[in-house]
Amino acid sequence: MGSVGFNAWFGGVSSEADAWERVDQCLAGLGFSKGQADPLSGSVGYANPAFPTGVPLSIGVSGPVANFSIYPITNKLRRSSGDDKLRSLLRDLCDGTSVLLGRTDTAEMMGVVTEAELQSGPDWFDWFQYWGPDLVRRWGLDRIKAGPFRLVEPRPSGACALTLFDGPDDPDQMKLQRRAAKHLGIQLREFPGSAF
Image (cartoon, rainbow, N blue to C red; front, side, top):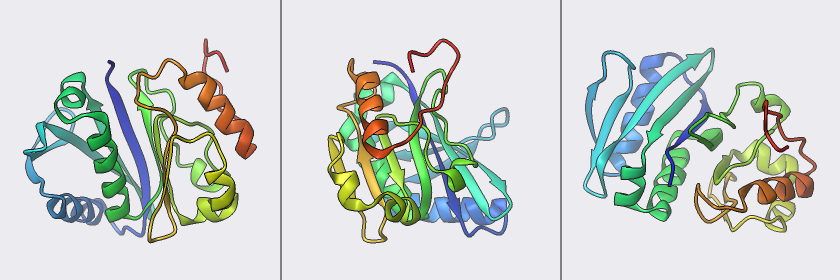
């Protein structure tokens, strides 16, 4: 079981303070309390009895869009909460902040969502991804549902939470990533030394 991260972009923000306020309100609504900021990383820990080790989150703003990252999602956090509970938290956080595109990534940060993907579309798949309404419309919900995803969760906003494989350590993840990309006609990003 390895550490993973989660990275997402959301729109309609006017400042970094505005972005933090939106995330804070969402996490408070999910039963989290905000801790102190780490002076070195700038990340803030959020606590909830269901996630006893805390959830570290940081934010950056680029014009009208903001990016939040949860990293690292440690083995200890995954063991204490379970991957299904963690996936539900990521889905609910994306719903509450109106995420445009979000995705888990590896400890090596392969697959981190880039701002360019907001226009060009996703170029990577991982264990969990969240596609905002524009991406769902672009590829079509029926086509997405017909893909190799383990779980497809249409959201009331028109967004969709997609779980591609059982957990971040699934031994078939590379095969499933290629199948999802082929099904949706997406060219996967290339990484030095990757098998793609």
